[in-house]
Length: 608
Image (cartoon, rainbow, N blue to C red; front, side, top):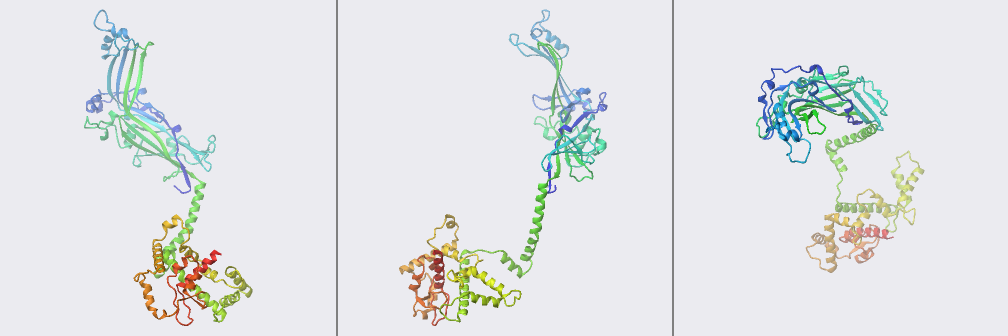
Protein backbone atom coordinates (compact mmCIF):
# COMPACT_ATOMS: atom_id res chain seq x y z
CA UNK A 1 0.00 0.00 0.00
CA UNK A 2 1.30 3.43 -0.94
CA UNK A 3 1.85 5.90 1.86
CA UNK A 4 -0.60 8.39 0.34
CA UNK A 5 -3.42 5.82 -0.12
CA UNK A 6 -6.15 4.98 2.34
CA UNK A 7 -8.38 1.91 2.13
CA UNK A 8 -11.79 0.54 3.08
CA UNK A 9 -13.08 -3.03 3.45
CA UNK A 10 -15.90 -3.74 0.98
CA UNK A 11 -19.17 -5.51 1.66
CA UNK A 12 -20.98 -7.70 -0.84
CA UNK A 13 -24.06 -9.43 0.56
CA UNK A 14 -26.52 -7.51 -1.61
CA UNK A 15 -24.67 -8.50 -4.82
CA UNK A 16 -24.38 -12.24 -4.11
CA UNK A 17 -26.63 -14.48 -6.22
CA UNK A 18 -26.74 -18.29 -5.95
CA UNK A 19 -28.78 -20.85 -7.84
CA UNK A 20 -28.73 -24.54 -8.84
CA UNK A 21 -28.31 -25.85 -12.35
CA UNK A 22 -31.21 -28.38 -12.69
CA UNK A 23 -29.66 -30.02 -15.77
CA UNK A 24 -27.16 -31.83 -13.53
CA UNK A 25 -29.76 -33.59 -11.34
CA UNK A 26 -29.59 -37.36 -11.61
CA UNK A 27 -32.55 -39.47 -12.64
CA UNK A 28 -31.65 -42.52 -10.56
CA UNK A 29 -29.16 -44.24 -8.35
CA UNK A 30 -25.83 -45.42 -9.64
CA UNK A 31 -25.26 -49.04 -8.53
CA UNK A 32 -21.49 -48.60 -8.78
CA UNK A 33 -21.29 -46.30 -5.75
CA UNK A 34 -19.73 -48.01 -2.72
CA UNK A 35 -21.78 -46.08 -0.17
CA UNK A 36 -24.89 -47.34 -1.98
CA UNK A 37 -23.91 -50.99 -2.37
CA UNK A 38 -21.96 -51.42 0.88
CA UNK A 39 -23.20 -48.80 3.34
CA UNK A 40 -22.07 -50.86 6.36
CA UNK A 41 -18.53 -49.69 5.69
CA UNK A 42 -19.60 -46.23 6.82
CA UNK A 43 -21.27 -47.26 10.10
CA UNK A 44 -20.06 -45.11 12.97
CA UNK A 45 -20.64 -45.30 16.71
CA UNK A 46 -20.31 -41.77 18.04
CA UNK A 47 -21.38 -42.64 21.61
CA UNK A 48 -23.72 -44.95 23.51
CA UNK A 49 -26.71 -42.84 22.51
CA UNK A 50 -25.71 -41.92 18.96
CA UNK A 51 -24.96 -44.51 16.30
CA UNK A 52 -25.07 -44.00 12.55
CA UNK A 53 -26.00 -46.90 10.27
CA UNK A 54 -27.05 -46.08 6.75
CA UNK A 55 -29.40 -48.42 4.84
CA UNK A 56 -28.10 -47.52 1.40
CA UNK A 57 -28.60 -44.44 -0.72
CA UNK A 58 -31.55 -42.69 -2.28
CA UNK A 59 -32.09 -40.03 -4.84
CA UNK A 60 -33.43 -36.82 -3.32
CA UNK A 61 -36.03 -34.94 -5.34
CA UNK A 62 -35.18 -31.49 -6.66
CA UNK A 63 -36.89 -29.61 -3.84
CA UNK A 64 -34.99 -31.57 -1.18
CA UNK A 65 -31.56 -31.88 -2.78
CA UNK A 66 -30.39 -28.47 -1.48
CA UNK A 67 -31.30 -25.65 0.86
CA UNK A 68 -30.56 -22.01 0.04
CA UNK A 69 -29.66 -19.37 2.59
CA UNK A 70 -28.86 -15.68 2.27
CA UNK A 71 -25.20 -16.30 1.43
CA UNK A 72 -24.97 -20.09 1.56
CA UNK A 73 -26.10 -23.34 -0.03
CA UNK A 74 -26.62 -26.65 1.78
CA UNK A 75 -26.42 -30.02 0.00
CA UNK A 76 -27.50 -33.09 2.07
CA UNK A 77 -25.14 -36.07 1.97
CA UNK A 78 -26.60 -38.32 4.74
CA UNK A 79 -30.18 -38.31 6.03
CA UNK A 80 -32.01 -39.57 9.14
CA UNK A 81 -35.79 -39.51 8.56
CA UNK A 82 -38.32 -40.11 11.33
CA UNK A 83 -41.94 -40.57 10.21
CA UNK A 84 -44.43 -39.82 12.97
CA UNK A 85 -48.19 -40.50 13.36
CA UNK A 86 -49.82 -38.89 16.40
CA UNK A 87 -53.13 -39.90 18.00
CA UNK A 88 -55.56 -38.61 20.56
CA UNK A 89 -56.70 -40.32 23.81
CA UNK A 90 -59.52 -42.35 22.20
CA UNK A 91 -57.28 -44.17 19.69
CA UNK A 92 -54.50 -44.58 22.22
CA UNK A 93 -56.49 -46.00 25.15
CA UNK A 94 -59.77 -47.57 23.83
CA UNK A 95 -59.59 -51.19 22.78
CA UNK A 96 -60.89 -52.26 19.39
CA UNK A 97 -63.82 -54.77 19.34
CA UNK A 98 -63.37 -55.86 22.96
CA UNK A 99 -59.77 -56.90 22.20
CA UNK A 100 -56.63 -56.01 24.08
CA UNK A 101 -55.30 -53.86 21.19
CA UNK A 102 -55.92 -50.16 20.79
CA UNK A 103 -56.52 -48.63 17.38
CA UNK A 104 -53.27 -46.61 17.43
CA UNK A 105 -51.27 -49.79 17.92
CA UNK A 106 -52.94 -51.47 14.94
CA UNK A 107 -52.29 -48.48 12.71
CA UNK A 108 -48.66 -48.34 13.83
CA UNK A 109 -48.11 -52.00 13.08
CA UNK A 110 -49.44 -51.52 9.55
CA UNK A 111 -46.70 -48.96 8.76
CA UNK A 112 -43.95 -50.91 10.57
CA UNK A 113 -43.46 -48.37 13.36
CA UNK A 114 -43.21 -48.38 17.15
CA UNK A 115 -45.84 -46.86 19.43
CA UNK A 116 -44.80 -44.45 22.19
CA UNK A 117 -47.13 -42.98 24.81
CA UNK A 118 -46.76 -39.35 25.71
CA UNK A 119 -49.23 -39.30 28.68
CA UNK A 120 -51.29 -41.58 30.92
CA UNK A 121 -55.07 -42.33 30.54
CA UNK A 122 -55.92 -40.34 33.65
CA UNK A 123 -53.96 -37.27 32.62
CA UNK A 124 -56.03 -34.13 32.42
CA UNK A 125 -53.94 -32.78 29.55
CA UNK A 126 -55.38 -32.89 26.06
CA UNK A 127 -53.69 -33.17 22.67
CA UNK A 128 -51.44 -36.06 21.62
CA UNK A 129 -51.62 -39.13 23.80
CA UNK A 130 -49.37 -41.45 21.79
CA UNK A 131 -47.38 -41.47 18.58
CA UNK A 132 -46.07 -44.01 16.13
CA UNK A 133 -42.47 -43.59 14.98
CA UNK A 134 -40.61 -45.18 12.09
CA UNK A 135 -36.98 -44.31 11.32
CA UNK A 136 -34.93 -44.63 8.18
CA UNK A 137 -31.31 -43.54 7.46
CA UNK A 138 -29.62 -43.37 4.08
CA UNK A 139 -27.02 -41.53 1.99
CA UNK A 140 -28.00 -39.01 -0.66
CA UNK A 141 -27.03 -40.30 -4.07
CA UNK A 142 -24.22 -38.37 -5.82
CA UNK A 143 -24.64 -34.99 -4.12
CA UNK A 144 -21.15 -33.94 -5.27
CA UNK A 145 -22.35 -34.01 -8.89
CA UNK A 146 -24.71 -31.13 -8.33
CA UNK A 147 -23.69 -27.89 -9.99
CA UNK A 148 -24.39 -24.42 -8.70
CA UNK A 149 -23.72 -20.97 -10.14
CA UNK A 150 -22.72 -17.76 -8.42
CA UNK A 151 -22.68 -14.09 -9.30
CA UNK A 152 -20.95 -11.72 -6.92
CA UNK A 153 -19.98 -8.10 -6.40
CA UNK A 154 -18.90 -5.54 -3.81
CA UNK A 155 -19.76 -2.14 -2.34
CA UNK A 156 -17.12 0.16 -0.80
CA UNK A 157 -18.22 3.23 1.20
CA UNK A 158 -16.64 6.14 3.09
CA UNK A 159 -14.12 6.93 0.37
CA UNK A 160 -12.72 10.24 -0.87
CA UNK A 161 -11.61 13.42 0.90
CA UNK A 162 -14.91 13.96 2.72
CA UNK A 163 -15.79 10.27 3.10
CA UNK A 164 -18.94 10.50 0.95
CA UNK A 165 -17.74 8.64 -2.15
CA UNK A 166 -18.72 5.06 -2.92
CA UNK A 167 -17.61 2.41 -5.36
CA UNK A 168 -19.42 -0.73 -6.45
CA UNK A 169 -19.00 -3.56 -8.90
CA UNK A 170 -20.64 -6.81 -9.96
CA UNK A 171 -19.94 -9.60 -12.37
CA UNK A 172 -23.13 -8.44 -14.10
CA UNK A 173 -21.61 -5.00 -14.84
CA UNK A 174 -19.37 -4.24 -17.78
CA UNK A 175 -17.54 -1.64 -15.66
CA UNK A 176 -17.23 -0.74 -11.99
CA UNK A 177 -19.04 2.40 -10.83
CA UNK A 178 -18.58 5.39 -8.50
CA UNK A 179 -21.02 7.71 -6.77
CA UNK A 180 -20.82 10.70 -4.44
CA UNK A 181 -24.42 10.49 -3.15
CA UNK A 182 -25.30 6.80 -3.42
CA UNK A 183 -28.08 7.45 -5.95
CA UNK A 184 -26.48 8.39 -9.27
CA UNK A 185 -23.64 6.15 -10.43
CA UNK A 186 -21.04 6.74 -13.15
CA UNK A 187 -18.86 4.12 -14.83
CA UNK A 188 -15.20 4.09 -13.86
CA UNK A 189 -14.40 3.04 -17.43
CA UNK A 190 -12.46 -0.06 -16.47
CA UNK A 191 -12.99 -3.71 -17.41
CA UNK A 192 -15.11 -4.71 -14.42
CA UNK A 193 -14.30 -7.68 -12.16
CA UNK A 194 -11.89 -10.54 -12.85
CA UNK A 195 -12.50 -13.63 -10.66
CA UNK A 196 -9.43 -15.72 -9.83
CA UNK A 197 -10.10 -19.05 -8.06
CA UNK A 198 -7.39 -20.12 -5.59
CA UNK A 199 -6.86 -22.80 -2.98
CA UNK A 200 -6.17 -22.10 0.69
CA UNK A 201 -2.46 -21.52 -0.08
CA UNK A 202 -3.13 -18.89 -2.74
CA UNK A 203 -2.40 -21.17 -5.72
CA UNK A 204 -4.78 -21.03 -8.66
CA UNK A 205 -6.99 -24.10 -9.13
CA UNK A 206 -9.40 -25.16 -11.87
CA UNK A 207 -13.19 -25.21 -11.67
CA UNK A 208 -15.23 -25.63 -14.79
CA UNK A 209 -12.01 -26.01 -16.77
CA UNK A 210 -10.40 -22.66 -15.81
CA UNK A 211 -9.16 -20.70 -12.82
CA UNK A 212 -9.85 -17.20 -14.20
CA UNK A 213 -13.27 -15.90 -15.12
CA UNK A 214 -13.16 -12.64 -17.07
CA UNK A 215 -16.20 -10.32 -17.07
CA UNK A 216 -17.62 -11.61 -20.35
CA UNK A 217 -17.34 -15.21 -19.06
CA UNK A 218 -18.93 -14.60 -15.67
CA UNK A 219 -21.80 -12.34 -16.73
CA UNK A 220 -24.19 -15.32 -16.74
CA UNK A 221 -22.74 -16.84 -13.57
CA UNK A 222 -19.64 -18.77 -12.53
CA UNK A 223 -20.60 -22.44 -12.41
CA UNK A 224 -18.95 -25.64 -11.20
CA UNK A 225 -19.92 -28.85 -9.44
CA UNK A 226 -19.46 -29.43 -5.73
CA UNK A 227 -16.88 -32.05 -6.61
CA UNK A 228 -14.76 -29.44 -8.45
CA UNK A 229 -14.99 -26.95 -5.60
CA UNK A 230 -13.99 -29.68 -3.11
CA UNK A 231 -11.09 -30.72 -5.32
CA UNK A 232 -9.90 -27.12 -5.32
CA UNK A 233 -9.94 -27.24 -1.51
CA UNK A 234 -7.92 -30.48 -1.63
CA UNK A 235 -10.64 -32.84 -0.29
CA UNK A 236 -13.62 -34.96 -1.32
CA UNK A 237 -16.58 -36.57 0.46
CA UNK A 238 -14.48 -39.67 1.29
CA UNK A 239 -12.03 -37.50 3.23
CA UNK A 240 -11.86 -37.79 7.01
CA UNK A 241 -10.15 -35.42 9.42
CA UNK A 242 -8.52 -37.18 12.43
CA UNK A 243 -9.59 -34.28 14.63
CA UNK A 244 -13.23 -35.35 14.23
CA UNK A 245 -12.66 -38.85 15.70
CA UNK A 246 -14.06 -39.69 19.14
CA UNK A 247 -12.77 -41.98 21.88
CA UNK A 248 -15.53 -44.49 21.14
CA UNK A 249 -14.25 -45.04 17.61
CA UNK A 250 -10.60 -45.14 16.61
CA UNK A 251 -11.19 -44.23 12.98
CA UNK A 252 -12.74 -40.83 12.14
CA UNK A 253 -15.96 -40.78 10.11
CA UNK A 254 -15.91 -39.71 6.47
CA UNK A 255 -17.18 -36.33 5.35
CA UNK A 256 -20.07 -37.98 3.47
CA UNK A 257 -21.50 -39.02 6.85
CA UNK A 258 -20.67 -35.95 8.95
CA UNK A 259 -20.90 -33.25 6.34
CA UNK A 260 -18.40 -30.39 5.99
CA UNK A 261 -18.15 -26.64 5.48
CA UNK A 262 -16.85 -25.33 2.17
CA UNK A 263 -15.87 -21.70 2.69
CA UNK A 264 -15.29 -19.44 -0.33
CA UNK A 265 -13.72 -16.10 0.62
CA UNK A 266 -14.20 -13.35 -1.96
CA UNK A 267 -11.25 -10.97 -1.59
CA UNK A 268 -11.68 -7.79 -3.70
CA UNK A 269 -8.63 -5.68 -4.63
CA UNK A 270 -8.39 -2.65 -6.89
CA UNK A 271 -4.60 -2.50 -6.41
CA UNK A 272 -3.11 -5.86 -7.40
CA UNK A 273 -0.35 -7.53 -9.36
CA UNK A 274 -2.59 -9.02 -12.04
CA UNK A 275 -2.46 -7.65 -15.57
CA UNK A 276 -6.06 -6.45 -15.58
CA UNK A 277 -7.58 -2.98 -15.70
CA UNK A 278 -10.22 -3.32 -13.02
CA UNK A 279 -10.98 -5.01 -9.72
CA UNK A 280 -9.68 -8.54 -9.12
CA UNK A 281 -11.64 -10.89 -6.85
CA UNK A 282 -9.52 -13.70 -5.40
CA UNK A 283 -11.94 -16.53 -4.56
CA UNK A 284 -10.07 -18.64 -2.00
CA UNK A 285 -11.56 -22.06 -1.24
CA UNK A 286 -11.03 -24.04 1.97
CA UNK A 287 -12.83 -27.00 3.56
CA UNK A 288 -13.34 -27.99 7.20
CA UNK A 289 -14.95 -31.25 8.30
CA UNK A 290 -17.50 -31.00 11.11
CA UNK A 291 -20.87 -32.44 12.10
CA UNK A 292 -22.82 -30.09 9.88
CA UNK A 293 -26.55 -30.79 10.35
CA UNK A 294 -29.81 -29.13 9.31
CA UNK A 295 -33.26 -30.16 10.64
CA UNK A 296 -36.25 -30.08 8.29
CA UNK A 297 -39.91 -30.74 9.29
CA UNK A 298 -42.62 -31.67 6.76
CA UNK A 299 -46.33 -32.24 7.64
CA UNK A 300 -48.69 -34.47 5.67
CA UNK A 301 -51.76 -33.43 7.66
CA UNK A 302 -52.72 -32.13 11.07
CA UNK A 303 -56.24 -32.07 12.57
CA UNK A 304 -57.58 -28.93 14.10
CA UNK A 305 -57.59 -30.30 17.64
CA UNK A 306 -53.89 -31.17 17.34
CA UNK A 307 -54.47 -34.74 18.50
CA UNK A 308 -53.86 -36.47 15.16
CA UNK A 309 -51.22 -35.61 12.58
CA UNK A 310 -48.66 -37.13 10.23
CA UNK A 311 -45.28 -35.55 9.60
CA UNK A 312 -41.65 -36.28 8.73
CA UNK A 313 -38.78 -35.00 10.89
CA UNK A 314 -35.60 -35.02 8.80
CA UNK A 315 -32.14 -34.63 10.34
CA UNK A 316 -29.73 -34.21 7.45
CA UNK A 317 -25.99 -33.67 7.31
CA UNK A 318 -24.18 -32.33 4.29
CA UNK A 319 -21.94 -29.84 2.50
CA UNK A 320 -22.55 -26.22 3.35
CA UNK A 321 -21.12 -23.76 0.82
CA UNK A 322 -20.66 -20.43 2.58
CA UNK A 323 -19.50 -17.17 1.00
CA UNK A 324 -17.72 -14.35 2.84
CA UNK A 325 -16.65 -10.96 1.47
CA UNK A 326 -13.43 -9.20 2.42
CA UNK A 327 -10.65 -7.27 0.70
CA UNK A 328 -9.26 -3.77 0.43
CA UNK A 329 -10.27 -0.96 -1.90
CA UNK A 330 -7.57 1.73 -1.98
CA UNK A 331 -8.17 5.38 -2.78
CA UNK A 332 -6.14 8.59 -2.79
CA UNK A 333 -6.19 10.39 0.56
CA UNK A 334 -5.00 14.00 0.31
CA UNK A 335 -4.29 14.15 4.04
CA UNK A 336 -1.95 11.17 3.78
CA UNK A 337 -0.49 12.59 0.57
CA UNK A 338 0.42 15.82 2.39
CA UNK A 339 1.96 13.81 5.22
CA UNK A 340 3.96 11.68 2.78
CA UNK A 341 5.34 14.77 1.02
CA UNK A 342 6.31 16.28 4.39
CA UNK A 343 8.08 13.08 5.38
CA UNK A 344 10.00 12.97 2.11
CA UNK A 345 11.10 16.59 2.50
CA UNK A 346 12.18 15.87 6.08
CA UNK A 347 14.25 12.89 4.94
CA UNK A 348 15.84 14.94 2.16
CA UNK A 349 16.82 17.49 4.80
CA UNK A 350 18.05 15.10 7.48
CA UNK A 351 19.55 12.21 5.50
CA UNK A 352 22.51 14.08 3.93
CA UNK A 353 23.42 15.46 7.35
CA UNK A 354 23.30 11.99 8.88
CA UNK A 355 25.48 10.52 6.13
CA UNK A 356 28.06 13.30 6.39
CA UNK A 357 28.11 12.98 10.19
CA UNK A 358 28.58 9.21 9.94
CA UNK A 359 31.53 9.59 7.58
CA UNK A 360 33.08 12.43 9.58
CA UNK A 361 32.88 10.62 12.91
CA UNK A 362 33.99 7.15 11.79
CA UNK A 363 36.13 7.18 8.62
CA UNK A 364 38.51 10.18 8.73
CA UNK A 365 41.18 8.89 11.11
CA UNK A 366 42.43 11.47 13.64
CA UNK A 367 39.98 14.03 12.27
CA UNK A 368 37.12 11.73 13.29
CA UNK A 369 38.32 11.87 16.90
CA UNK A 370 38.10 15.65 16.80
CA UNK A 371 34.67 15.66 15.19
CA UNK A 372 33.41 13.05 17.66
CA UNK A 373 34.64 15.08 20.61
CA UNK A 374 32.87 18.15 19.22
CA UNK A 375 29.60 16.25 18.79
CA UNK A 376 29.67 14.26 22.04
CA UNK A 377 30.12 16.78 24.85
CA UNK A 378 30.39 15.17 28.27
CA UNK A 379 29.39 17.14 31.37
CA UNK A 380 31.15 16.79 34.72
CA UNK A 381 29.90 19.46 37.11
CA UNK A 382 32.92 19.51 39.40
CA UNK A 383 35.44 19.43 36.55
CA UNK A 384 33.54 22.05 34.52
CA UNK A 385 33.47 24.37 37.54
CA UNK A 386 37.26 24.08 37.90
CA UNK A 387 37.72 24.59 34.15
CA UNK A 388 35.50 27.67 34.20
CA UNK A 389 37.46 29.22 37.06
CA UNK A 390 40.83 28.61 35.35
CA UNK A 391 39.51 30.19 32.15
CA UNK A 392 38.26 33.06 34.27
CA UNK A 393 41.80 33.56 35.53
CA UNK A 394 43.05 33.76 31.94
CA UNK A 395 40.36 36.30 31.07
CA UNK A 396 41.28 38.41 34.09
CA UNK A 397 44.94 38.34 33.13
CA UNK A 398 44.07 39.32 29.54
CA UNK A 399 41.90 42.19 30.76
CA UNK A 400 44.68 43.32 33.10
CA UNK A 401 47.15 43.34 30.22
CA UNK A 402 44.77 45.49 28.17
CA UNK A 403 44.51 47.93 31.09
CA UNK A 404 48.30 48.01 31.56
CA UNK A 405 48.89 48.68 27.87
CA UNK A 406 46.63 51.71 27.98
CA UNK A 407 48.09 52.87 31.28
CA UNK A 408 51.64 52.63 30.02
CA UNK A 409 52.53 49.93 32.54
CA UNK A 410 51.72 52.13 35.55
CA UNK A 411 50.23 50.45 38.53
CA UNK A 412 47.54 52.88 39.54
CA UNK A 413 44.09 53.35 38.08
CA UNK A 414 44.76 51.44 34.88
CA UNK A 415 41.52 51.32 32.91
CA UNK A 416 40.34 49.95 29.59
CA UNK A 417 38.48 52.71 27.76
CA UNK A 418 36.43 53.10 24.63
CA UNK A 419 39.30 54.91 22.94
CA UNK A 420 41.66 52.06 23.69
CA UNK A 421 39.10 49.64 22.26
CA UNK A 422 38.94 51.68 19.06
CA UNK A 423 42.71 51.51 18.75
CA UNK A 424 42.63 47.72 19.15
CA UNK A 425 39.85 47.43 16.57
CA UNK A 426 41.89 49.50 14.13
CA UNK A 427 44.79 47.07 14.56
CA UNK A 428 42.57 44.03 14.21
CA UNK A 429 40.64 45.31 11.19
CA UNK A 430 43.46 47.11 9.45
CA UNK A 431 43.41 44.61 6.56
CA UNK A 432 39.65 44.82 6.11
CA UNK A 433 39.56 47.42 3.39
CA UNK A 434 35.80 47.15 3.01
CA UNK A 435 35.23 48.77 6.44
CA UNK A 436 35.48 52.52 6.76
CA UNK A 437 36.33 54.38 9.97
CA UNK A 438 32.70 55.25 10.57
CA UNK A 439 31.72 51.57 10.31
CA UNK A 440 34.51 50.58 12.68
CA UNK A 441 33.17 53.14 15.14
CA UNK A 442 29.78 51.42 14.88
CA UNK A 443 31.41 48.13 15.85
CA UNK A 444 33.02 49.75 18.90
CA UNK A 445 29.71 51.32 19.92
CA UNK A 446 28.02 47.96 19.46
CA UNK A 447 30.50 46.33 21.86
CA UNK A 448 30.35 49.16 24.41
CA UNK A 449 26.55 48.77 24.69
CA UNK A 450 27.23 45.48 26.45
CA UNK A 451 30.58 46.21 28.16
CA UNK A 452 30.38 49.78 29.47
CA UNK A 453 30.59 50.59 33.15
CA UNK A 454 27.31 51.80 34.54
CA UNK A 455 28.92 54.92 35.95
CA UNK A 456 31.04 55.83 32.93
CA UNK A 457 29.89 54.94 29.40
CA UNK A 458 33.48 55.11 28.08
CA UNK A 459 35.06 52.61 30.48
CA UNK A 460 34.86 48.82 30.03
CA UNK A 461 33.50 47.01 33.06
CA UNK A 462 35.78 44.17 34.13
CA UNK A 463 33.03 41.76 35.20
CA UNK A 464 30.97 42.38 32.06
CA UNK A 465 34.07 41.76 29.95
CA UNK A 466 34.76 38.40 31.57
CA UNK A 467 31.10 37.30 31.46
CA UNK A 468 30.86 38.14 27.77
CA UNK A 469 34.16 36.36 27.16
CA UNK A 470 32.66 33.14 28.63
CA UNK A 471 29.06 33.61 27.47
CA UNK A 472 28.97 30.24 25.71
CA UNK A 473 30.58 28.16 28.45
CA UNK A 474 28.50 25.38 29.98
CA UNK A 475 29.19 26.72 33.44
CA UNK A 476 28.82 30.45 34.11
CA UNK A 477 30.17 32.50 36.99
CA UNK A 478 26.66 32.89 38.39
CA UNK A 479 26.33 29.09 38.43
CA UNK A 480 29.51 28.70 40.47
CA UNK A 481 28.33 31.30 42.96
CA UNK A 482 24.95 29.57 43.34
CA UNK A 483 26.49 26.10 43.66
CA UNK A 484 28.77 27.18 46.51
CA UNK A 485 26.25 29.44 48.22
CA UNK A 486 25.61 27.69 51.52
CA UNK A 487 22.71 29.99 52.44
CA UNK A 488 20.74 29.46 49.22
CA UNK A 489 17.52 27.45 49.63
CA UNK A 490 17.70 24.31 47.47
CA UNK A 491 14.71 22.48 46.04
CA UNK A 492 13.95 18.83 46.73
CA UNK A 493 14.87 17.60 43.26
CA UNK A 494 18.07 19.64 43.22
CA UNK A 495 19.10 18.04 46.50
CA UNK A 496 18.11 14.59 45.25
CA UNK A 497 19.97 14.75 41.93
CA UNK A 498 22.96 16.86 42.97
CA UNK A 499 26.29 15.46 41.78
CA UNK A 500 27.61 12.92 44.33
CA UNK A 501 31.28 13.77 43.74
CA UNK A 502 30.48 17.47 44.06
CA UNK A 503 28.57 16.95 47.31
CA UNK A 504 31.36 14.79 48.73
CA UNK A 505 34.09 17.36 48.07
CA UNK A 506 31.91 20.19 49.37
CA UNK A 507 31.26 18.25 52.60
CA UNK A 508 34.96 17.50 53.07
CA UNK A 509 35.80 21.16 52.63
CA UNK A 510 33.23 22.28 55.19
CA UNK A 511 34.60 19.82 57.76
CA UNK A 512 38.15 21.05 57.17
CA UNK A 513 37.06 24.66 57.52
CA UNK A 514 35.31 23.85 60.82
CA UNK A 515 38.39 22.06 62.20
CA UNK A 516 40.67 24.85 61.02
CA UNK A 517 38.53 27.46 62.73
CA UNK A 518 38.64 25.47 65.96
CA UNK A 519 42.41 24.86 65.70
CA UNK A 520 41.87 21.09 65.55
CA UNK A 521 43.01 20.36 62.00
CA UNK A 522 44.84 16.96 62.05
CA UNK A 523 48.28 16.82 60.54
CA UNK A 524 47.48 14.12 57.97
CA UNK A 525 44.21 15.60 56.72
CA UNK A 526 45.69 17.85 54.04
CA UNK A 527 48.92 16.26 52.79
CA UNK A 528 48.86 18.35 49.63
CA UNK A 529 48.64 21.53 51.69
CA UNK A 530 51.50 20.39 53.96
CA UNK A 531 53.66 19.67 50.91
CA UNK A 532 52.95 23.07 49.46
CA UNK A 533 53.78 24.61 52.83
CA UNK A 534 57.16 22.80 52.91
CA UNK A 535 58.00 23.91 49.36
CA UNK A 536 57.28 27.53 50.21
CA UNK A 537 58.87 27.49 53.68
CA UNK A 538 61.15 30.41 52.76
CA UNK A 539 58.06 32.57 52.20
CA UNK A 540 56.55 31.88 55.63
CA UNK A 541 58.68 34.67 57.12
CA UNK A 542 56.59 37.20 55.25
CA UNK A 543 53.11 38.25 56.23
CA UNK A 544 50.21 36.43 54.69
CA UNK A 545 49.13 38.84 51.98
CA UNK A 546 46.57 38.95 49.24
CA UNK A 547 45.58 41.44 46.61
CA UNK A 548 42.52 43.52 47.28
CA UNK A 549 42.27 44.23 43.56
CA UNK A 550 42.80 41.05 41.64
CA UNK A 551 45.98 40.99 39.60
CA UNK A 552 46.32 44.79 39.45
CA UNK A 553 49.52 45.02 41.55
CA UNK A 554 47.94 47.39 44.05
CA UNK A 555 48.65 47.58 47.76
CA UNK A 556 48.59 44.21 49.48
CA UNK A 557 46.55 43.49 52.58
CA UNK A 558 46.92 41.08 55.41
CA UNK A 559 44.86 37.93 55.15
CA UNK A 560 42.53 38.98 57.93
CA UNK A 561 41.78 42.26 56.15
CA UNK A 562 41.25 40.46 52.88
CA UNK A 563 38.85 38.02 54.48
CA UNK A 564 37.01 40.85 56.18
CA UNK A 565 36.33 42.50 52.82
CA UNK A 566 34.62 39.36 51.54
CA UNK A 567 30.90 38.86 51.99
CA UNK A 568 29.92 37.08 55.15
CA UNK A 569 28.56 34.25 53.03
CA UNK A 570 30.93 31.34 52.77
CA UNK A 571 30.68 30.45 49.07
CA UNK A 572 33.79 32.33 47.84
CA UNK A 573 35.91 30.83 50.63
CA UNK A 574 34.79 27.36 49.60
CA UNK A 575 36.74 27.79 46.39
CA UNK A 576 39.68 29.65 47.95
CA UNK A 577 41.26 26.75 49.80
CA UNK A 578 44.58 28.51 50.38
CA UNK A 579 45.84 32.09 50.39
CA UNK A 580 48.51 33.19 47.94
CA UNK A 581 52.05 33.61 49.23
CA UNK A 582 53.55 36.12 46.78
CA UNK A 583 57.30 36.13 46.32
CA UNK A 584 59.44 39.17 46.93
CA UNK A 585 59.01 42.08 44.57
CA UNK A 586 55.89 43.13 42.71
CA UNK A 587 55.40 40.05 40.60
CA UNK A 588 51.65 39.38 40.25
CA UNK A 589 50.25 35.89 40.55
CA UNK A 590 46.82 34.20 40.74
CA UNK A 591 45.93 32.44 43.98
CA UNK A 592 42.87 31.17 45.75
CA UNK A 593 42.48 34.55 47.39
CA UNK A 594 42.14 36.20 44.00
CA UNK A 595 39.34 33.78 43.10
CA UNK A 596 37.70 34.42 46.45
CA UNK A 597 37.69 38.16 45.91
CA UNK A 598 36.48 37.78 42.33
CA UNK A 599 33.50 35.73 43.50
CA UNK A 600 32.91 38.16 46.34
CA UNK A 601 32.70 40.99 43.87
CA UNK A 602 30.21 39.01 41.80
CA UNK A 603 28.20 38.42 44.98
CA UNK A 604 28.27 42.13 45.72
CA UNK A 605 26.94 42.99 42.27
CA UNK A 606 24.09 40.54 42.71
CA UNK A 607 23.26 42.03 46.11
CA UNK A 608 23.05 45.49 44.57
